[in-house]
Length: 367
Image (cartoon, rainbow, N blue to C red):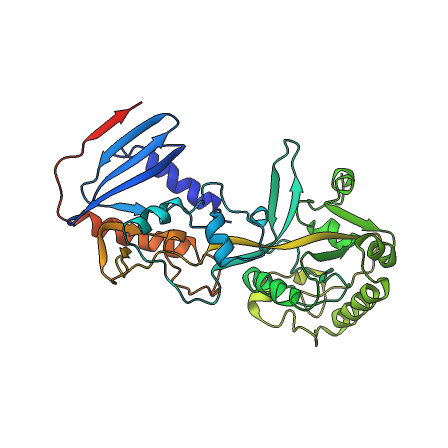
């Protein structure tokens, strides 16, 4: 999911002799005058560092996803606990840029990118958030239903469209949380959420309520508070689709993208649709999780941050989720955040290195 790539890039960066990594640091101020950005203040615990900027500052702090103010404005009704983003995505870098007159962009399909997520409390009390990208929900033997027990979404669509579909469906029928349902065969083959494949050691997940189980669909429906007949009908209809290979309700498994996330080894006519037939039956609750910001600072083709007047703020750049997504809040393919982040980071670094250089770097450290 991108972790190996990011880890390797960070490792390579750490080996460069002219790079110093400041861990657990927080930017508290950006100094700017008519010539552009010329200083940056960092805090590490009780230490404050005043750094003179020669050529530029590139903001890449992960976006607004953990900024309560921006969430209330852009993501109303979506709880922060559903976000699987890193703790540092507080939007503080964007706030500093806005203090210099930077403009937050507007106009996109969605202010964030989405994925269905499931939640579980860790032993230390913290909450784990698991994004259901491709490992389970798109596989045969899995369906997703609303609070009534009825399907409402193509389970094999992109995780972004899945998250949007949950929110849209919830406007008319309670669909947050939704329920990812599978039978014993699918759980053994693929796992479900944080439950790994194999079907063993389920007791802790059942005990804390992350996983629900029933020896019959009616029993499972009772535990989930939904109508047993509706869930039974949803499963029966899915099983007929599995036999024919055609989902006449939501067109599951009709594109190469969707089929790529299925399992042709099951021998079904459609690699994304399989019957739910082997008891017991299991369920995990799903929530729409914002996995990354699509709304960010307005930039130009060199990744320079633009002011309210539409002109670049000299020496200030934004990439990654701090930059307004060039995708316009549309999911085009995997890598919609890290791909542009890499491209525009290279562009920004190249452009900054060619700017007029100020006086030699000077760092002042105060306690």
